[in-house]
Amino acid sequence: MKKYLAIGTIVLASISCTETEVEYIEKEIEMATAGETTLVLDARYGDIDFELNKPMDYKFVEGDEEIDLKYEFTNLRYWVSNVILVNEDGEEFLVPDSHYLVEETNEIPIQDGSYNKVYPAKKREEISISDIPVGNYTGIKFSIGVAPEYNDNLSLQAGELNPLNGMSKSSWHWHTSYIFTSISGEMEVIKDEPEAKSFIWEVGSNDYYSQKDIQFDSPITISSKTTSSINLEFDVEKTLEVDAPWENNFIGASKPDLMEKLTNNHIAAISLVSADFEVK
Image (cartoon, rainbow, N blue to C red; front, side, top):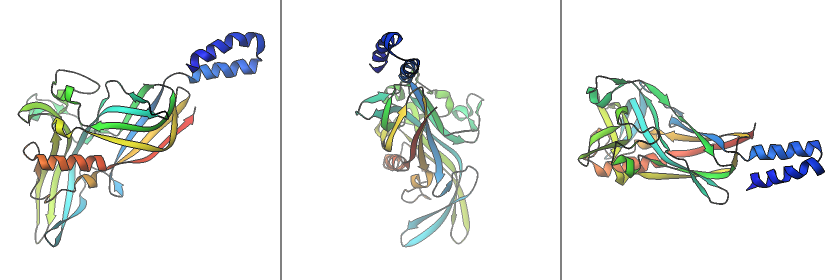
């Protein structure tokens, strides 16, 4: 609406406005075009940066005893989907086809090696979102996992969804669907003698498709004349808070209670750092 009002005004500008006023109106028209923003999900481990292939300390309680544990991660991957930006009037803009794979991983054999191909090592923490209607935005919503429509039918494509990226599995309630979150590596317990074993913690199934809702400290303006970023922190250490992690080194479809716990942990581990914008 503002764009059309400005266009109507500029017709009169040639008669009644100065050159400076005409330039101002033209700038207002330019402002009324869609913009873009960057969603950052910075992986942390407590107070330090999250890293693969590096031992990281962890403590858990077993009975009355505090146990020292070390995690060495080889894989961290999860889906961010159905991204919604909320403006100052409470109106929601759903980003079309918004399924994004956030990851930090070593090389992964595709479909357990059945295709004789390897998914390359990657690190991806930033999501670029474009064609956002002009506005002042006060919050963002998104889900962790894959929307049921696509999770139940891998032949459907949206955004970055692809069954060949190593994030699909045939064991989620006896049918093939996407893995929503995956974290794996080696764990070492420090008792009388150090002992190590691998761990794989994965979540799938529509039951655990969960939304995160974040409110900004102050609104950000998104348009073709601004640059902006939404900076979030994902604390991996918080996702590890499950009972008896040493005994539960494999979590998947056969352990729904622990999948629910991992889901809740993941949602709680995401927090706002800042939401900023500036005029270009």
